[in-house]
Image (cartoon, rainbow, N blue to C red; front, top):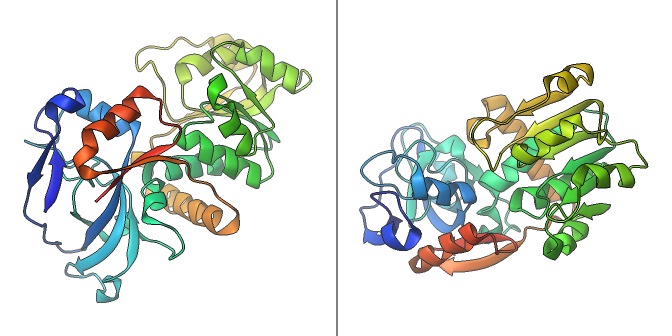
Length: 324
């Protein structure tokens, strides 16, 4: 089978290569999926650039979609021919979705509705489930207005649509060139985080009241809002990332006296209950409204280097997907 992989960390053009590898055989509890698409996410390019390899090689990418071709022992044969999308394809293992076939535990291959394309479904695993879990957490709050940072990103775009659909007012942050993406997703306003003070703008947009919830992709920046009136007392911050992965100072006094709630989550490590709830939320969202998945580029597997470079550049206004 045609496969892209790397055997060491480095730049995309230096380490990614195409190889032929044997088709895997599904083991007990697994399904073999003939992949049609593979999603490329920021975490994939970060892993390739610098995270220790899970073995002597890595086939990158955790997300993808395709058709079940065979099943292992213990899996109902009725799943053969089923259209599916994949989550955690390459999490803590060597073999991801940048290949023609993947064998995964059957619970990691989710049945896909016939009216959803494989290109769209290749964006569900990381962006879709991160957004869905974030909105599930948001639903535990009573805040009618939520700040979504990075609202033009793949995750943020889904978040904005989902939160709007469930009746919350979304204030997004994005660079000026991407404001239209955020507004089209349903936000009531978008703040240019590069040129404007986010806290001050939030106060203006809420008539001084602030917001009761934040779904955040960059805690290094958002942590500064803890000491700002932009966060209401007892506000909740739900965070799934940070541009600075080191020590980030937070004013404890403000956390304490404002009773700020902070919850961090990693989509790869959701427990079974959280995962099932996120999948249910994502399915509900896709079936219940005019959901929009922004796909900026669909490239053949042979152009995986360019795909990684597009994601790293941050210039793709939407998801980057490989066609297999």
